[in-house]
Amino acid sequence: MAHESILIAISQIAIALTGFTGVVAILGHRNQGTWTPAERLQLRTLVETSLTAMFASLTPFILVLLINSDANAWRVANLILGSLHASNFIAFGLRTRRAPSTLGQKVMLIIGIITICAHFLAALSVVTLYELVFIGGLLQQLLVAVHNFVLLLFPIEDLS
Image 1 (cartoon, one colour):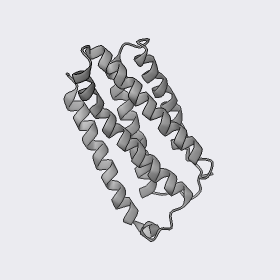
Image 2 (tube, helix red, strand yellow):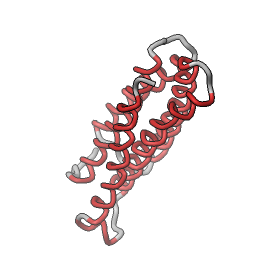
Image 3 (spheres, one colour):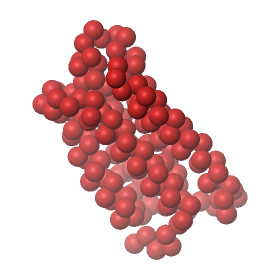
């Protein structure tokens, strides 16, 4: 597997992002349990996407051991990541009914739709750049996590 170092680096970054949520939690009034709906949305999105990137970045290692073909292992990895990504997407959509989202989060949703489609197209062999689609999806999840981390550090007062 030629992409081991990239996948391990992504996993380490995802772990670090998840760990930084503790730092965010103790900043300001948040340590007293007075999270706004927007802050809860951002925190959950940060944690879910970084954990998705972390766990999904490890799946190709396991799949290569289980599946004889590297191409098929990457196809299954794309199916798994696409499914995880779609579940994050749905969860975010449901949560935005109770909390406002930012313009940046809405842009991330559009990128997310494109990425999810790319994962499923790679899983079906319509797109054959399996590794690139997979790593791009991991990076998209990290980008969403970083974006929400920044929103938590520097809150936007009026999200409407």
